[in-house]
Length: 371
DNA sequence: GAAGCGTGGAA
DNA sequence: TTTCCAAGCTT
Image (tube, rainbow, N blue to C red; front, top):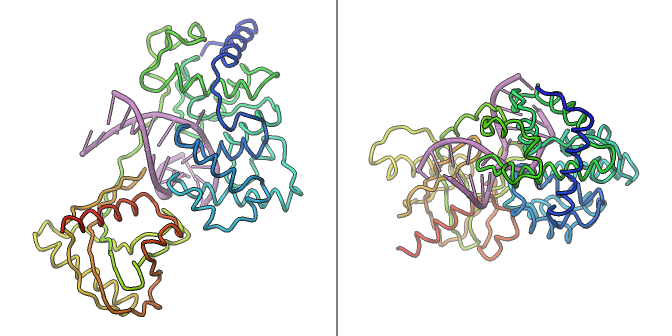
């Protein structure tokens, strides 16, 4: 790995910051350096694209304009504001951190990366981003962009998916970043990584720092960053129960731990792929659904299979296949024993749905219109 | 240190 | 359709 001279470092900083001053993006959270604004945007941007985040950010700031408003908000309102963004523990952790700031720091933001990292949901990257942007601390903010950019500039062969990579890049970036405008430097690196130095179709020919890009000069750009690839999602099968009663549809709130924690879906019953027998759907699955309802609430309902096909939804590490079953009762049911709630379609907005539940509902509606 | 945790877009 | 990627953190 080549070590840059002080002159080369200075030149790099100037080229990069000049470009950032000219071409840096004008984003809603860049209007000021308020730590709350920086923080909310950074959390939303974790593993999420800028275009997706913008409308969520605007809405969130209207609903929860300050740390104290966030600290005091009911959790269902927080989840609703986050609905569709994914990685829902982010917003729960954010509220915990807001409460920590109010209780442990007297409503005053800690202003160093080391202190910020003690807050819930704030790791090395986010701490570096807030400290450098809001408090002008000279500290790296190493996200996927920074890993990619610096691995190419220096042809770093360390696997970025390993925790081991963190200190390697940290000291490298600390060497290269300026004492002045550390926040702009970090953001410029990210803008560079999402414009010229992209993962798939980089355009380093036009990059403001192309002559510093060793991997590009060697024609080896796409070899960086080095990373081990993720395993493919594991298949999981469910029966999704669409139970319609005069009081509404039966929806269940998921456990407070694990996937889609505290979000609402139709009752989902997991099943193994027993066989590819043709009567699996017409016999085995309705029986499975009946057993589930009897065991949880002593309820007996006749099911029928909807004409719809199986709904699939892929998460980072699981691929769900859900078979819809429909049961309607015209008499009122006592579902007080059932771990769920009866909700009319007109009141669905009162609970938070994950995407997979929206898909189930859409598919159910479609199958009705086919009938 | 590896696994768990959502969703949307691009090729 | 499949695969990979996008401003990561927690356990």
